[in-house]
Image (cartoon, rainbow over all chains, first blue to last red; front, top):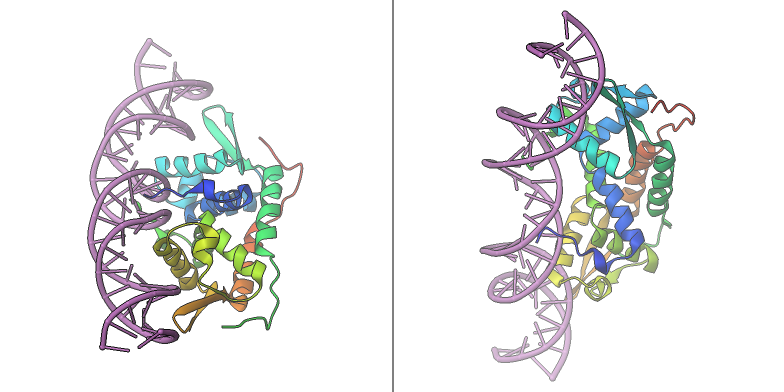
Length: 110
Length: 110
DNA sequence: TTATTTCATTGCAATATTACGATTAATATG
DNA sequence: CATATTAATCGTAATATTGCAATGAAATAA
């Protein structure tokens, strides 16, 4: 049914999977890396930078904004985007805790 | 259309998105957390533990195994699963580098 | 006003994902 | 042997995702 049964899982598990899902497309990874790299707002050149059509980029930006990872500000006829640093840090805490579950060596039994 | 244009992105960007995608479903997050929690192999009770049907769990396990994050070993009529700790650590390096991009405060311009 | 620019939205086609019933394969047990 | 147990695979339905052409909305420029 193409539909995750979220009610069977904890809020934490659903939150982790939502953050992970938004990173699950290379275009969104590329957009975020570019925003970090220029370390300020980007106005307009993301379409040239990434190489997908303008409506496609706009859709990816919408998803990133919906999760709160970026901010968008209208600036004349263009819109400036940048990382939402507070929310990024909060997301990082959640994801890092998941990734850092104890990895005890020589406990493998398979 | 329904298909990511991976050839437009770097290997690193594609790798990050592949790891993220597998974490993009709460059932797979729950499976991994359970494997870490018991800190050994689990034989069979994942279906009871997670609450989805057996073919569904089997499919999620297949994806985790395909990415190398878990190991499966046949043990009589059942199969034991556990975290592939080496590969988990390698994955963690890639993901942590992505998450830890510099977050410099007071640089926001929007 | 009439372009022009920039980005969002709509609508659609192609593909992917999720879930599970039915079945199969493999091993164990009586 | 026959039967149970366990998990993978097949097939399919429902839904989600991706990508873009066409269009729309809002601000600016001529």
